[in-house]
Each structure stands twice: as C-alpha cells, then as structure tokens.
Length: 222
Image (cartoon, rainbow, N blue to C red):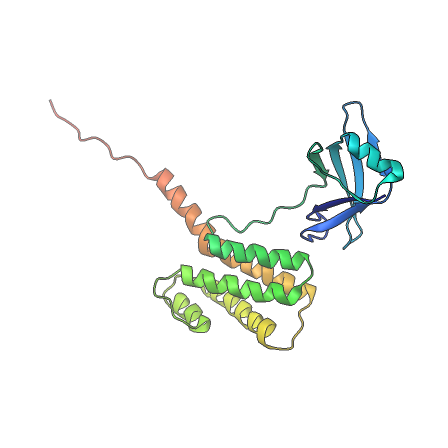
C-alpha cells in the first residue's frame, strides 16, 4: 500500500504536494512509540522524513489488506517533518497586502512558474508604491518617477522599480518567457525594494526613538 501526506516540499517549494511512501519498510517504530516514515515528493522526487505516533488502524493498513492511507488521522499525531520547509515571509514592516502578493510571487517561483512570479512581483511593486504616498499617481511609471523626484525613494530604488515594472508588463502582455535566472533576479529586486521602502525606515525610526534622551528636569537654585 501507499501512505499519502500533503505538505509543502522543503526542497522544491511546491505547495500542497502529495508525498507518497511505497512500503511498510519505510517505517520503523522506536522505543517511544514514534514511527519514522520516508515519503517522496511527486514534483522533485526528493524525500522527507515524517515522525508520527501511529494508532492501531495504521498498523492494520500497513499489513497489505488496505488501499492507500493518509499518514495522519484522528488518533495519529505528527511529531515533526525533516527537513523543515522554509517559511516564506515578506521583509519586516511591509504592508500586509503588499507582503501577501510578494509571498505569492515567491511561492510561484518555487513552483517554477516564472512568468506568473514576475507578474506578481510587478503587482507587489504597484501596491508598494501606492502605500508610500497618499494620492499616488495612477500610472506606475509616473508614480515611480514622482516618488524619486520627491526623494521618497532613492534613485537606485527607482531604477530597480522600473526594471520590475517593464519585466512585469512583459510577463502579462507579451509572448516573452522568463527563465529561472531572470525570475530569481526580479524576486531579489522586489525584496530589496520592499526592504528599503519599509523595513529600513522602521529600523531607523526605532533606533532614533531609543536614542532620544529624556528631557532633564528643570534645575532649582537654593
């Protein structure tokens, strides 16, 4: 029989991949009643080790009299999975909506959907530039230039933003197919932009507030 386990692959990043274990020989119960099961990703064919506390039905299923079984159940507790999947997070202090789109872009990169990844990076940039300025201009190209002119972003950030904008447009409107290397660069540019736009200013603000001296009490003369 085959044991099934749905999770995010820590190797290729595929979300919701259904891992499979092909035989009972992959599981061994230790003295503490924990079974270690080796399962294989259907996308990249790499393996993970899942440690569970099995119940009686699990042993019966493994006897060969049952069809495919889920690794987890009402009385089967997952202890750990190795290696641990890398958690995707946006740079600190990134607005939640911007961060959600950035995370989606990285998820698509891990799933090897390069064009979708690039298009989402452009969307994250669009939302980020709107968050940086009230009454932001409608067109992203003009918005980037306006933010740079007002020194709300640096010239380097404006240059990165323009690259992401152009490539994102290509991903959505043109027949261009992006490579893994190109998508990786655009994700890195997007992450750097978000860090400089939201994380760094918050860090500087926090540091200044800590260093701000308390007002001395007025002196009194005898």
